[in-house]
Image (cartoon, rainbow, N blue to C red; front, side, top):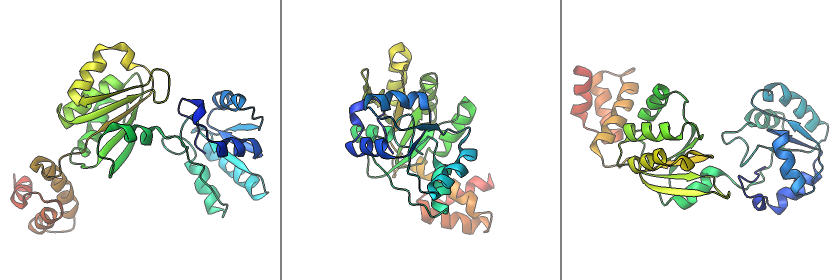
Length: 268
C-alpha cells in the first residue's frame, strides 16, 4: 500500500479505510508510521518489517494470512518494494496462494518523471547507485548507451558526488533533472545539463539536503558512440558462443553499430 512521500494529504481515502480495517499493519519503521496513523486516527496494531528481519518475519505473516488475518504492508514513504522492503513477503504470500492486492498512490520516481519534461514513454528505474565512487562509475558506465530515461534515487550525503560521477561518465552536456524533497515544504526541481546541476548543487548547501530523485536523459539512439558501446556489450556476449566475425555481424545488426569497429576492437 502506497503512503505519502511528504504531504500527508496524499494518502488516499481507500488507503485510510484499509489501514483502519485490517488486523495488522506491517511497517518498515513503526515509529515513522505512527505519525501517519495518528494523523488519521488509525489505531491498528503495527509490526516492524524491514530489510534486516523480513526473511524471518515473512513465514509468520504468511501463516497469519492463511489463518484469515488481513494485513497491510507499508514502507516509510511511497510504494513498498520500490527501493523499499516487502519483496520477500509478497513473493512468499503469492507462492502460498494468497491474494495480494495493490493500493496505489505516491511513488517518488513516477512523481519526478511526471514533471521532469524528459522522455517518459520509455524509462528505466535504477534505484540507489553504489555508495563507493569506483563502483558507482562502473555501474554508470554500463548505462552509457541506454536510450531510455534513467531514474535514480540518491541521499543527501552523496548527491554532489553522484552528479559529479554522472557528468564524467555520461558527459557534462547530457540533460538531467534533479527533484528534491518532492511534495514537501522545500521541494525544488532543477533542470539543465549534468554539469549545470553539479555546479548548482556544489555551490548551494541547501540543495544538498533532503531526499533526491535524479533523472538523466537517455543516450541519443543515433549517436555512433552510444551504438558502439551497446554493440560491444552485445558482441562480448555473442562471442562466447560464436566466432568473432559472426558475433560482430550479429551485434552490428542488433545494435546498429559498425561491424568493422566491433571486429577491430577484438583484433586490437
